[in-house]
Length: 128
Image 1 (cartoon, rainbow, N blue to C red):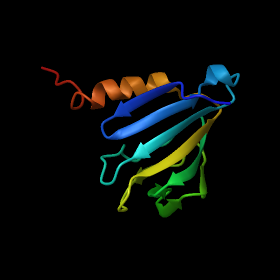
Image 2: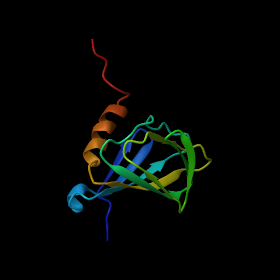
Image 3: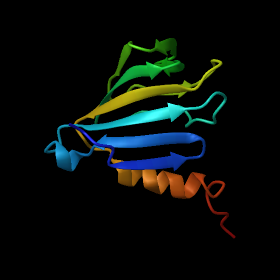
Image 4: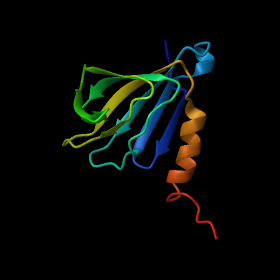
């Protein structure tokens, strides 16, 4: 049985870590993420060293994967290979939630905590 290890809030997004690399001998990390209606989301990005599989839990998330739009609904899954540019939005009328599994487990809660430290204070510091 897996318990929620940590909840991280980044802007309007909520990430619940379920498994860290230390729990799986580095084979995977697993987290649930909530995307409220109209939430600001990360810009399109890619992962150089790990694949990501996303499973819809609630609502509908609109993903763009390699330039193609994919609607991820409850009970559907989406595989995003490493190196493929992707992003997501919640364009629907209700909050959406998904489960993400990254293999191998190279991204963890520390990355998201550092990102939260930047985003939750309004962005990058201004250099003078």
